[in-house]
Image (cartoon, rainbow, N blue to C red; front, side):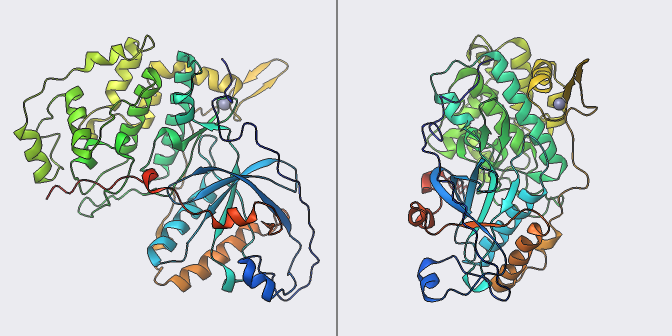
Length: 443
Ligand SMILES: [Zn+2]
C-alpha cells in the first residue's frame, strides 16, 4: 500500500524550524511573562524555573476554535504541532469550552485519537490569555487526500474506515460525542495512521432526553438528518452518520450529499433513502416534518451506491447502508460496524504493520488481546458544574496546566524572538466559512 505525503500541502516543503534551545536562568519568586510582547518589554521579572523556548514555524491548519502551527520541540528535535487556543477568556462560555477541550486532550489515550503531548508553560496569571497545546504532527488529512490526484485503493478505504471507527468506538465508550466528524478532522500521517482531531465541538452525551442540545454542530455535508430536522436531543449516532458520508466519499472521491442549504441537504438525503416513516421522524420538529410530508413521496434509491466506484462491493455497500440510516436509533454503532466483515482486512493490515499495540518478535507477530479498546471510566465532565466566572475558570485552568507538567519534562514556552512570532500571536481562529453553518430555523 502506498504511503501518503505528496497529497499534503501542509508540511511538505516546509523549511525546518530553527532549533532554538534558549535556557533561561532560574530565579525563584516570579515568573517571566512571555506574552504579550508589549508588556514583556515593560516588565521582565526573572523566571521561576528553567524553560525551553519553542519556535513557531508555519501555520498548518485551522480548526473550529484554534490555529495549528508546526514547531520543533527543542528538547528532542522532533517536529510537533502546536495548537493555539486564542481568546479563551472572553466570556464564560468560551472558557468552559476550552477547558473541556483541554481536559479531553489530556484524557485521551488511543492511537486513533489525537491527544495532548504537552501544554506550554502558562505565564503569570495576569498575562494568561492564550493556551498552547502540543500534539503529534500529522502530515495530511483525509480531505486533502480525497481531493488529491493520488490513487486510493480499496485497501486504503478499508484501513482508513477501520481506524475512524476504532477511534470513534473509543470516544463513544468515553461517553463523548465528537459532533464535527469530517475528512478535514481526520489527520493522516505518511504511514496511513489516522487520528481523529479537533474537539472544539465535542461534549459528553446527554442521557436526559428532555434536555436540549445545541444544533449548531457538524459541518453541513456530514450533518445527520435528525439535526437537519431540528431534533432537540441527539446521540452519538450523529457521528456514525458523518462516518457513513465519509465512507461514501472515500469510495467515490466526491462529497456524497453536497447541498447548498440545510433544506437541500435534507432533500438529497431523502432522494437516496426515500421518504422517512413517521416513526423515523419522531424527534423532528413540526416544521421539518411538514416539509417532508408536503413533498412528493420518494422511493429509496440505495442501489445507486454501487455506482460510487468499482470499490463499492456488496460488503462495502451493505456496511454503508447500515450507517446511512435515517432513524438514529436504528443506525449501526461503531462497535457493531467494526464487527462487519468489510473491515476484517483493514483490521489485519492495521495490526500487522501500523499499530502500536502489537509487536513483532523473531518468532512472529504478537497480537494484542483487544483490537479495539474502550476506555473505563468514562470522561467525567462533572468539573463543569461549578464553573461560574471567567476569573475562577482562568485560575482553575492555570492550575490545571501547571499540574499537568509536574515531574515531567522541562517546560516549554513560546520564543518571542522567533521570526514567526508576530504572525503566530496575531493568527486567530478559523475563517467563518470553516465553522459549521447555522442550522435552519424551521419554526
Ligand atoms: Zn495492534
